[in-house]
Image 1 (cartoon, rainbow, N blue to C red):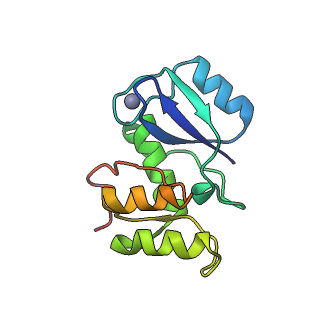
Image 2 (image 1 turned 135 degrees about the vertical axis):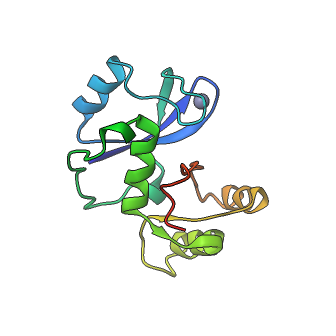
Image 3 (image 1 turned 30 degrees about the horizontal axis):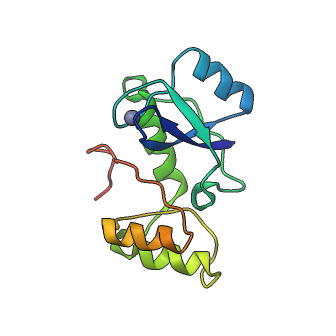
Length: 138
Ligand SMILES: [Zn+2]
């Protein structure tokens, strides 16, 4: 499983999950990867965000819901399957993981813009992701 941190031509950053580098190149060539915010298929590949780069992550199985297979929904579902929801304790947990006070794992949650900025200033990288309504278990 490869996790790439992608940035579209409009500066939106999002995660792409691929079974291999070849899979990434093939999907990218066929314009099957789109920004979850603006839908653009023009993007650059950044260094992976360590927060979400999970070792031992399971390869995705065949999608049982083809109607939901739009790339951004697939990305959201992958993220939700491989991360722990820490709710509004996101900033606190991200910090604890960064300073090795908590087990290293993928987390997702809610953080204010001020919290995200503070994390960035401490060198803790977070990736914004709009979770589609209906996928969120809450
Ligand atoms: Zn975009």
